[in-house]
Length: 281
Image 1 (cartoon, rainbow, N blue to C red):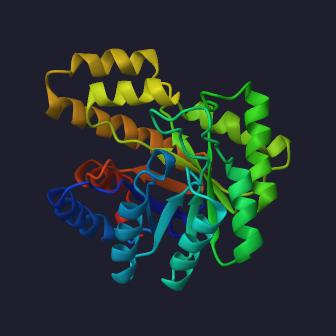
Image 2 (cartoon, rainbow, N blue to C red):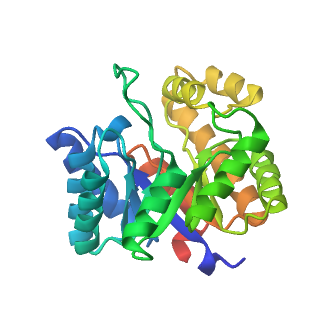
């Protein structure tokens, strides 16, 4: 696959403060220089950042930046989600990241999760082909999945419901992605599955988040990162090297592009993209 055909995308979360919003505007401007196919904007557990997500999407969209809001039903009913999708349609948004979403903390048993395949089917039912639909994939399987085979079949269900592409949870073992792709092909999944890439910025935050979301940090990598715990600059340099090599392996192995979890920071992602030569596309 030529570099010209690789898809590149960057993910942000909605800042909660004015200072955070100002910083993110600079990050967006910096990463916009790489001409990404789109930016995506996350949606908090239970739709908790709904308004902040919508406001950020509207802002990006007004700058002619391709933007893909994340969306889950959360605690909203069908009418509310349909109204939000209509707003996005009217604003010219062309892509949605459709997710089951996470259970918000402190919610009782009456809270019902709506699975991503149901959300995809709902969007297709009411909006046809208005939106390009992205869904999530888990090369190291979702932490709540019964087993590996069920998780792969569930991904197929999202595609069967009308999804166009999938973006993976981040991982650090490229073999996990390649094996996952083989298993997907065996059950008839032919749609693109884009690797999610997490820059290594802060060791403690990375391990805490990875342990909670089921993303494996190989033992050798944990041990190496631990040795840099009190040297943030060395940790970032090492992390940049490791993640660059991961991306090189993925692209050489046929990955159709890369989706970066930026953590609202520009420099680590920009350095990796530049190392890969993707700034010259």
